Length: 261
Image (cartoon, rainbow, N blue to C red; front, side):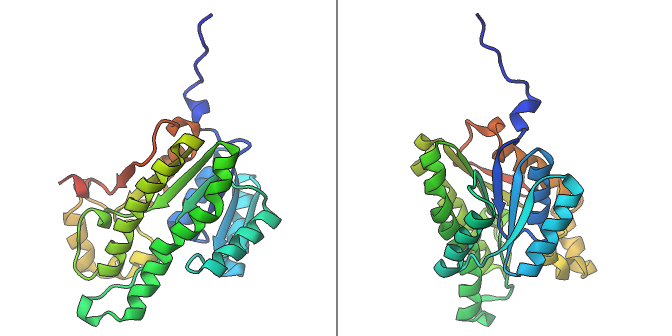
């Protein structure tokens, strides 16, 4: 008898799966959490602010009908991640899908940046994904299934002035993604990275409000515009689902063609 192949759309369903998205009270993190909830996952969103996490969770649950909870969590320190893991287990249970989205950016030429500026960005953007993956990944491996999605950036590939801490952190995220993919592949856990280009998030507010800088960015985008927040949904669902079961250690540019040039 011929083996029945799964229906293409069924491969993207996440019914019965649970997801944790860090830094998800707003921006791309919230949109990715929404996408996972829309295709059936239960979703835990974390933020440094307990109120922001709870408010975002209530709104997302009302909009999608999915189970969504909010927990407080600072991913930049071992103690913060330990508390995040404990609170997640107590209020949510196990995690099948981890989206390491929490991130910060401090811009400035290297001569104007302090040690604290560098540490703040690297601790959140690079050490954070390491700590959170270490906290949740081994349990995924023990259960034989898991998805880890790290948020890197187009700046892991190309450079812009004034972005030394951010670009360095995101290049590290891309390398971390490859290493974890190799370590966990045999256990049924995939690890991939999304590398966004310019999106209209709060992090980019100062660029959006400066017509000259905004136009300079648009000129470098083959599609001729910045990304809309919803345009990250498809790749997030793909990497979180069975549709990507043979994909690991990869980085996906979502940048309007910037890095293709």
